Length: 103
Image (tube, rainbow, N blue to C red; front, side, top):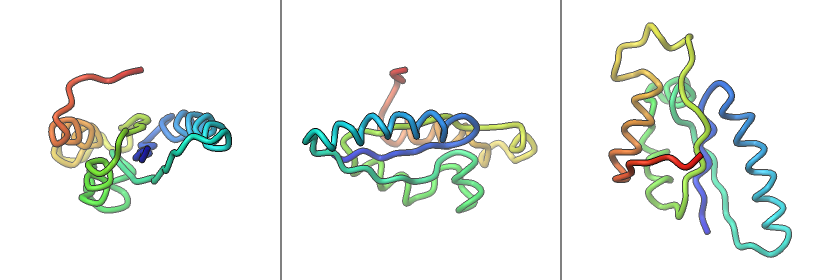
């Protein structure tokens, strides 16, 4: 199983790091899990000037699952609406034809 790991912003990286620890235990017990990390949200904007970089979208499309943290933060409030972190979340949902989050 290939999992796209998208930590995002704020508390997202901290939460996702704990989830990855669980997946690592499963891997040690024989689960066939492959994880690759990419930026989304403010992290995507900071790294690539886009809240959903093309490489992140490509990774998500090729994955069997997406583990996504959180997006956004007050430091991005002044950005134009298309560049705001939450636009990355909305776009990935649209591009992957998703409509619900499991929490």
